[in-house]
Image 1 (cartoon, rainbow over the protein chains, first blue to last red):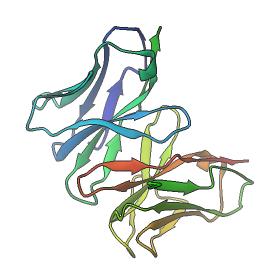
Image 2 (image 1 turned 180 degrees about the vertical axis):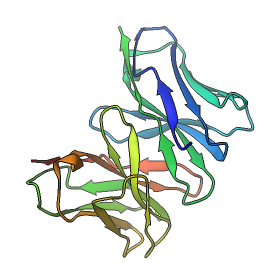
Image 3 (image 1 turned 90 degrees about the horizontal axis):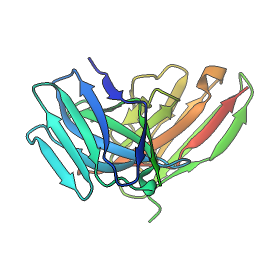
Length: 113
Length: 111
């Protein structure tokens, strides 16, 4: 029940295309859903996050879509660029118990120039 | 403003040796976390702390110990290293707004 399932494991997209990464969760106590971006040799960094009271959040080329009834959320990267090539992690966090965050397994995105 | 600093960046240990990983944050955050990252498994929480002098177990605490004697520092110890502890270790601190800030990681190999 604590798992966050992420797919696909890897993704290759042409420059200018749309990258889509999907995640699903089981624990209805989760109340915060961040996405992290990680470049090789670096630590993860927060990219964008959403709370379950909204169905979509957009920041620049990055959009989170959230479906509370299906317990699924996804990251869309519009107009994907080679500089977006990185590993992306979805995550979920409950608001109690130390604010522990559960991470998905990650998606390695490669954007071809 | 350095954010979250981890030392060392790399380390090679022999089975049975001990070591301590240091995490320091200069953002006055109360919450701090230690994760390990393994291929195909994302980040898994080892231990965390909700404030100076407190620690708690995460998802994969066995074989590790932690201490938070000062608010800015969170130490992760391996008493008797095993090859299964070969991993990349990340420390993070959490702002009051809920954002986790990660260090650059420590690559540990246990032979």
